[in-house]
Image 1 (tube, protein in one colour):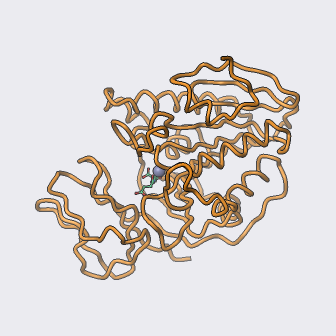
Image 2 (spheres, rainbow, N blue to C red):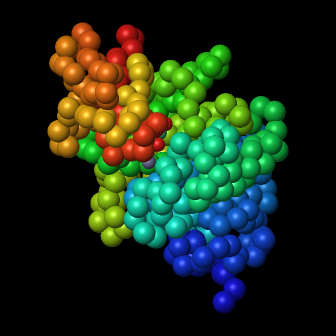
Image 3 (tube, rainbow, N blue to C red):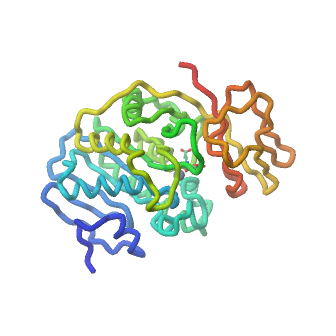
Length: 332
Ligand SMILES: O=C(O)CCC(=O)N[C@@H](CCC(=O)O)C(=O)O
Ligand SMILES: [Zn+2]
């Protein structure tokens, strides 16, 4: 059955094995262009010269469903004319197959395969998909005119509870400056804390930041739950922020949230990796001075100073990957 642009994008993407959408179609206000499965660009017929060019992605991890529902609601409102799009927009539903099965990934964590890392894991299905998403993002930003903002929000939810429920992650910026305006925008969306990465990574937001010169953020918006179990009222802050951004309406701004920086990654080198943190320990939990956070053969990760905190502890990752991040506050 041919896809109707008015149909539910998420349901249609999950139902289709591959892209069986038209290449493009024209609505009253805008044109929709499908770049691939779950990869949809929207271009208003009347786009101001300095309009924002915005990429919103969700479902890079298949178990993180609430952001996917938020994205789908925004799209439904744009198509129905309830939200007047004033920006060029690329929507990415990252991993439709994993979303269907409710798994973080099938073969390999896709958010470790960007910025070319997919070439090292050619047998993983996520490698092909990461390469396709990279190409689509690069193409999208390649036509952004000088002076227009390039923005990317990669929406996630976390496996564990968190001392700060909503936080943003800034990929390593090399010589680029922090964007204070974006930090205030994030504050206005209810983001409580900001983590600055200290090294390049194979994440989607690092890719668009470094290779597409976007102001890119990974947003952690709450706890990961299956479809049908999300309380979307907990995502109202980001939904409202994105709604205003897409409509070029006055943003809500709030003071810059708490700042942290990544000190080092806990790398799981082997199956001998042991994490000395209970399953219930939340993100941003303080690590007592001298605590042995994790051990892996002869390697011991020891907390220092009593001000460090743990983020994303996960001993279940594949060897070679990050099993947690030790972070510390950044002085104002
Ligand atoms: O809850 C967890 O352990 C992981 C949540 C998640 O997917 N976080 C992202 C953060 C990406 C980044 O560091 O920018 C990830 O691990 O890919
Ligand atoms: Zn995630």
